[in-house]
Length: 387
Image (tube, rainbow, N blue to C red):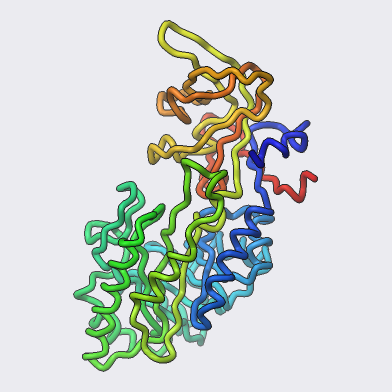
């Protein structure tokens, strides 16, 4: 187990904390770049909502990826990390005026616009500043994804995007505006998707919409297919690198591009998910008539995914002194019954003071931490810092 060999680095660090293995991160980035180099019109923007740790962002910037932001704060963070503004796409259903102003002032690559009112505000603010903002329209393709209901985004019932039947109307409106420049379409159907058929369905829907636009005399330059590729939470050590080959191959095979078009991807979890682990200390082992509880000092304030999505993270005891195993519920200290990381799992025999690692926590872990119960936010450290 790779992380076990790193335990000596954790001495003296207050738990809970996040640990990011930059070797895994760089191997993941190398795999992405190896695939997109096969296509001179493919561009990947890292979805910073998955993890905005500054040191993690700096490694991603070194690999040459662009950025997908969903808030002004994220734009400020990635600029701090060294990303050029002209690689930033800005998505989100509720952009505030100051965030739009920031994007226009920094001359970001593109706004992914989700409604007519938003388009009108962007045009108004750009006119006031004497600038032209590049926009793509996020279209809701009504394509389902085989994933948790809380992280599907491409169905008609979801709040995201513009309805397909309104697509032409919105594009025509943008073409009348002097301070926005319409460039293309944006899509995103959900997260933690492992079935390539979902991406095939999206590609085919985009083809239909392109045919419709072409018949109306409308040409686009940018096709942004979003992200959504999942990771292996069950066997992270056996599959640390997501299936980028098949993912990009889907779009190469099924997406029918027009001459001069570029394809943009917004991968988040697939980039950082497997490089991170939440390290927590066992406070107590409590036993009642039917259960053994390993009570740890991390809670859903530090990693909310199990409570929010019923998500599974593989848990390992990093400091076990025995090969014997036992069955535990691993729970946190928060005063809520949902503060449970996993139930009835087999761990090497666990005692007070042991360090546990919750694997595959590099995405939607540290970034979603909260101060509920007035708890301190967890720190994040990279393997390079702790050598």
